[in-house]
Image (cartoon, rainbow, N blue to C red):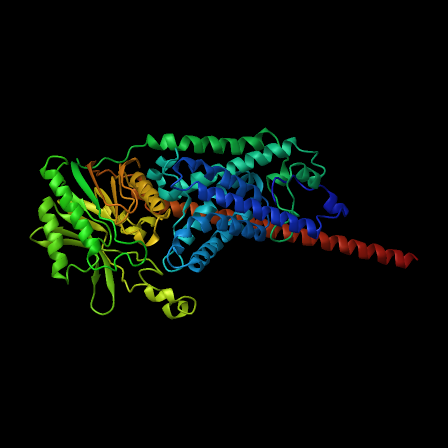
Length: 594
């Protein structure tokens, strides 16, 4: 494992041989295993294991120990294996009904982004001078940049599995209100890397004499690769400038204290107040589906009937005084499995349910457009009137709702022909239902930072996440998605109603707490009093600003490291040339005198 190294001694200058090829291979294998273990720990920190959020700390501690002072190519290998350990189990649900090949290919492809991130994290450990002590900061900023890249390309990106999404139970969660998911990811990664740096410093100080770098590394149970930077010369930085000292230990210790204090301090920062808001009663209807898998809606109108039936049961409970009268009823994505604008029987069924419950219903429906395309829409339906507002899903899911490069991918799997022909909407994500401005992010959209931004800017006081998770079976996917909604609640200081066809549906308060939830693959009705919000968090004002600031910080650190590496390489080349010239002159003098 290329880490916890003390500076090499003059052995390199005096001809002492470096690590053998066999030893370097062993070290590379050890580093890969440790990184893989770190990735598994990060996976285990994600929901539904809410109580294990803290495993993200040792996950990045292990990754940090591998990456510190490693060559970029070793960093790529470590980042890639870390990504496999994390993403393969995290995304296993993507192969629930289409086989293991798409799951493995997706996980491996996304792990390449983590490999690239690992390479740059290793590179920034070469930042020169006093700035080198802040390696955990530079590396955590690079991680945020890696998440930005992974969430942007290709085909619009795949932001699932961002570190911040796994931290709804973390005491650091309140920082999401200041800088969104990027700042939450940054703080989580920084804590693990700072701990790695602290452990490294302490072990180096207590290890064997610094005069034997390889012996010191062996004393710590760690293999050591030859410490050369990208240009082939020894890197500058703490490992070569100071073997220990209180100052060297103080920096990572202070970083840990700052991260620990960040959450409680962020919770004290109030959101900017807005106009007075009211309290409303919201009902979420989970009607369930007749079967799991891709054919959940194969039985015509079965899904719609299920949701209408549960709404009518709620109406009966309200009439009997067992439930409060809702102001708003929210159905999930695809709750009308046939287009109610083209099928009068579907329209009549929805209208009857709205009339029975005496409240407008937000209905999720697939609408057929002219030609072959379809739209994934959220409709506001009022009894006797029909549709009074509509928003179409703006971020459609590649390989599911549409198939990029369809003819190419058909060469590998016939499942491409099951992908839809959806087209994205162009609205701002804001619906008005019963006079309540409501931001809507349909299923996949919740993973993107801009999902609610435009709607909140336009005055949304409530967030709604209608989703259909039936195609992923009894997997962890729905819990991972629920965690994202909890983080969004804190990020924007808004209540969130999550409603799915088959679970888990939930009511979430602006502090990210779940007040009520359903189970999976069972019908259910949630009714809750919800305090609407008109406040504006710092995160809502800054939007993508913190993410870009951290990304640029990481890139600047990488530029400094690369520049310093090239400068040292030039110095080494000049010294080598001078030594060679002196040797030739000495030999010439000897020959002349001989």
